[in-house]
Image (cartoon, rainbow, N blue to C red; front, top):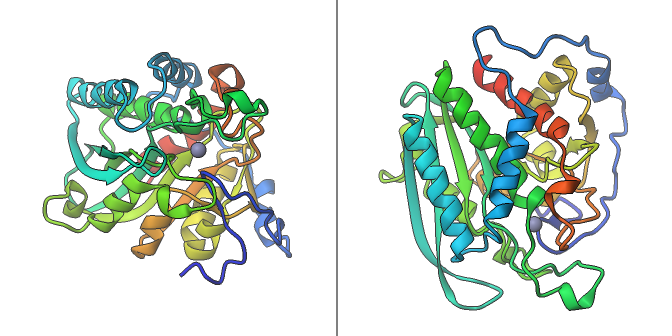
Length: 326
Ligand SMILES: [Zn+2]
């Protein structure tokens, strides 16, 4: 499916320039000129960038959330607890895997929080809650075996989903929504995509199984949020999303333009091997919202101070619109 794509960047290691960074024609650029409309939806709590920023800090205060760690368990328990407190259905799906870096067996757990009417056509929103066990791109060689804080790479996407959980608890959405918290995204070895996205791969491969809560509905589409918290966020149309789910990707960016969300740039960006790819492989439309122009990527400098509530708010407002204006 992906062999025609000339180059791959994945969330963990290979970083190769994309052959054609720009769309040849300006056809999609029309979105930039779309009229700006108010992003607020009557009766629905407005997405707060400050609240999402709080969730980044809360996660980073737990320490690294590497698979099998105390921080990972603490965050998973918090997600489950929050969902229960807000009266949302929550399911945890665990499986054993070999951690590619430590080569030890580790239990990975995906968490699915469901809101809105049961069954039917549903929106699947995902983010990885694990963090990378090593800072292998750090400038300082002594720090390269240190686990990173993952404020942007991990916590940012989760922060948006956690705040959406609060909003959906206050205002039940008109369509079914499943929030997917993936484990085991970021423990691969540089240069080998097979070690990345372990949680999402398992979830996508089993999403039609009877025991999987996702099997109760039909996905309208998947949106993966990854590295969407940095200041001056610029999210292009990720390469795999654009090639394999062009209509879904264009619809998301058109929606962002209509909302006047300047962080979303309707131009072709790099292809990133991320948690959306396993869903694309299942034939499910999926878009990865990611700003891979991130100098602190896989370094110890990926800390909350480089994140911004304003960036999180743009992503959150887009998700709220997607949820409440199907
Ligand atoms: Zn990463």
